[in-house]
Length: 236
Image 1 (tube, rainbow, N blue to C red):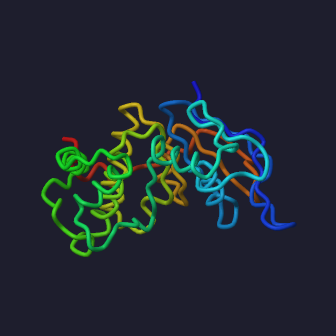
Image 2 (tube, rainbow, N blue to C red):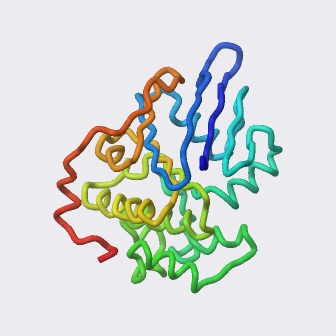
Image 3 (cartoon, rainbow, N blue to C red):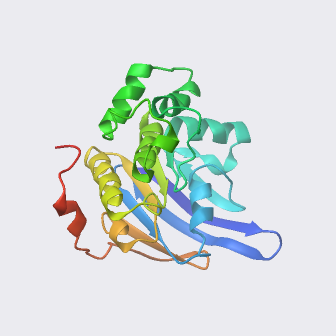
């Protein structure tokens, strides 16, 4: 069963800037897809289309059986809220809220705020002792893990991450990838946009973009993950 399908998706900005051209792509439920390509290849545009932050000029985007390309702005907001967990490179945490409150904020949009559940989500990403810290009191890796906990709190159908390790050092990259591997092992569907061959190598499949076109969909090349063997997993 496909969780996500892009059928003939094109995005035109203005009259002559073709950001995506006739993209066809499938992601099965429970699969991990890495999206790679040079700057300007269309990765950000594809993420915005998949994440219901924009609509294509033409073509269809089917997410969990729903054609989001034909939805209204209200429809897209509902899909983002109910079906997608977004993880950003820049974290986008509210500076005056604690880690716990930042996670609870995502619950607020579902009208189901629960401190115990938010606390449990932070514990799952190894931050049980940091729940009352502000973003300024957390390292970059800890802030990214808060972002992941926030994305997961409403049990999304699809986890969509944009350069999730782009601002992290090697140790924190290992911790974040540990979480992604755990999510994948429990059946989550992941789409991860990345420049890193190491991050991409964890995925089941890799799609390569060039000039707005998918030029290759293949198994990712093998990579020796030295860092992940040096430390114990947060999952034991």
